[in-house]
Image (cartoon, rainbow over all chains, first blue to last red; front, side, top):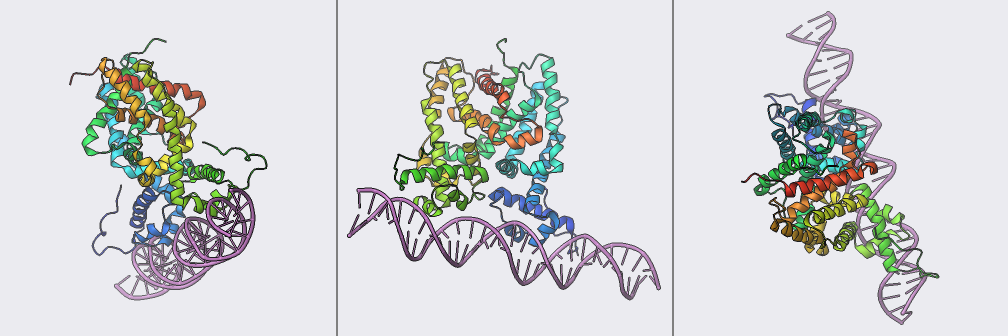
Length: 221
Length: 221
DNA sequence: ACTAATGTACGAACTGGTGAGTTAGTCATA
DNA sequence: TATGACTAACTCACCAGTTCGTACATTAGT
């Protein structure tokens, strides 16, 4: 998470809107991710901030809008990571694998993001729908997938009849589930999907799965 | 959901502990799935029941234990479905596909179950941990997978080096994500993963993915 | 007559949100 | 550079409506 910088410059100003807003967002992210939308307490968020509850309402308007702002920033982080991705020089197989691993790594490193998205789904994605920022932006990953897929399909390397959105869903589902369902899965089956010792195992499993699917020999028809 | 039977027998008793308990569980399932643990209201659950809030505390003890009971029943439903599964007569490929489709169908038909599990994960699976019933039961599906996998690997048909738990995770991730993340995915990418018109497409995609993974030619390694 | 089951009424603690007043920083002007 | 007007940033106290849980009275069924 983009964090608040240290105690500000020396002799720093006591008033700093940007810092205050960022600090509220930081704490709110943690609190919402920890307890869910209704479980999160505005008072608790305020208490863990150097400012007061009144400021939350001053800057964000209310709990609902605060959660929306938290979501917007969280989605911004992954969108940025996806934009960094450079796979133009790789062959389709390596490119897809790299892309999948990016999602894998991001989700593992941002469990709060996963929790926020889970929470947003419980609430029918109403905050995304209400957000001007989040409504229209397609994932940069989608464009990348589209290009790779086209190249791989043209060369006959990829035999699967999928489009970019479906492939994105496939990759996301594995990466997302591993983090989002870590607790129930661990409790029921006694295996920690996010165990660091198993990280490479699952990372390879994801790539193998996607590549196998894309390059499998299909029965005609 | 196992529902409450009709108005009870004629001249029926006004007092019927079993029916009252079942009705509370039915309504509680809906309410928890709709609003999350903290979003759910005990008063609301009681209001939608033919009984009163007092009965919830009389039979279940409290909100926390009520949610646990709801979870226990929901997991019971899928466990039962898995036990019905008969794939002994099928070859490994068909058997795995059948199993995957069972999970696919169940998750699609029980969105409330998916939501409950998502909610339980937000709360660190603490209710599962606290439940005697849920703590120890391994999924029947796991035993089935184990047998199929062994048979497929022995015959050399399955080349992948996975165990039953990992394969179960792979299948579940796709089926679960499709339902759990339906709303955010739809809002962000404009595609409804649970669109009935696309049902067969995704059902086939799941099977193709799993089989391709299991039977892919691996680089010696 | 005795107990399990049920209904009524209530309260203490919380919870999101706000009204009203205060202070720090900025900037135009003398 | 001193000053005073102006506004963004901030604090404090408080409220109205909830929300989980329970004490107590009551009734159905055996």
